[in-house]
Length: 152
Image (tube, rainbow, N blue to C red; front, side, top):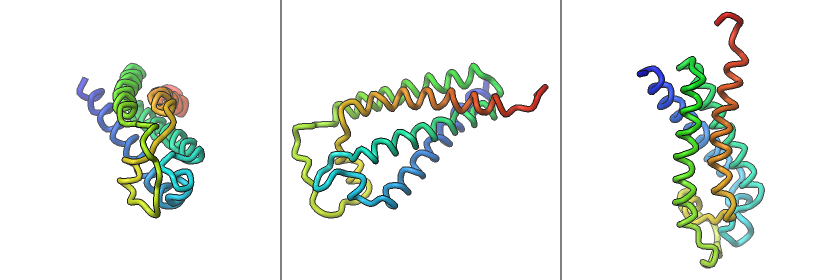
């Protein structure tokens, strides 16, 4: 039981570290002009696609790490459920924050944390992330399960 709890915590932290590390690096590499539409806080299509890919990658890492530690498919399913629940809560918070009618005019460079706070994704985007996270955890666990040597 303790091993399963530890596996869930460590893998969730590992997946989030991968996500935030890569997404922060991509933000600085791409620059503000490619993250947002010109002179706006509306998030660009390229950034949306990149965010989904990196989110999937982080979730796959979490699933892989979870199965590596716990050696239990059931624990990975529980991690996928936890990821689904936590990202769904995040989705609700994000939907309450997004105001598409607010003026989204951007002037000049913006700091990273301000950009993340002021960015306006499409209304459908928060709904996709819980699904991507849940599926990514299960895919990562399956990948780890497929790489096990016979008899292990």
